[in-house]
Image (cartoon, rainbow, N blue to C red; front, side):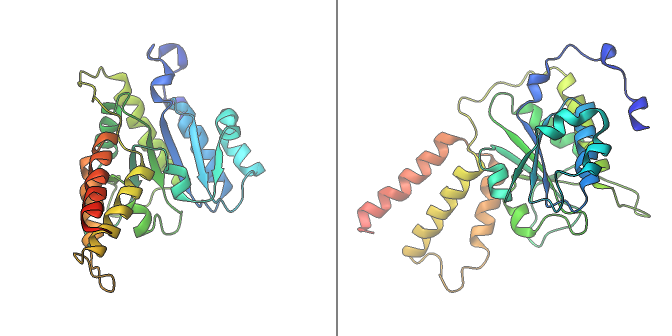
Length: 256
């Protein structure tokens, strides 16, 4: 029934769909196959088609096909992977949906602001939006792998959104953002991927521990805060190479 409220294809913009090909919707361990199908339908109505499912309880499944309705092509092309790390390894900007406040605050925006951020990436790289489990969302560790967090404001009397509904809200805002004309100056290097940043942080932690800046037995929250710093900055591939080169230089000078 929801589809009737959206404009038909002949009324849509002439914007090529390929503009959004690098935007990935990631469902993390969904328990109900109907939500996977509903997600595929929500994506297709807004011009997105890149769906990744992490360790689903039941998929493929007839209920997913039924809920997908006219979006079976998106559902059939969905990739199933074993972990969040695998789902986002080649992504350059990762957003995690969350309804909870964190002990260490992370950059957070609503769906409209996140859609603008993704649009402004331009050709800088791939983006992924993570949607967590129906019962308890994303883990703290999964959220720490994200550059940004996303929250959907809802009525305090009943703030609960079905998984597919949440995907629909976010996909609508992305679709709307890509209808606008961007005048942003393109960046001169692509953004670092999630895996490249993870490797950088692992290298940094090793160096800081070897030089006794970090206590291996009690490291505290230093690395979490450094992870947040790099997530907020959105560093590019050259900046990663420079930082890792600095660490290697110190290693050679100290004989590590």
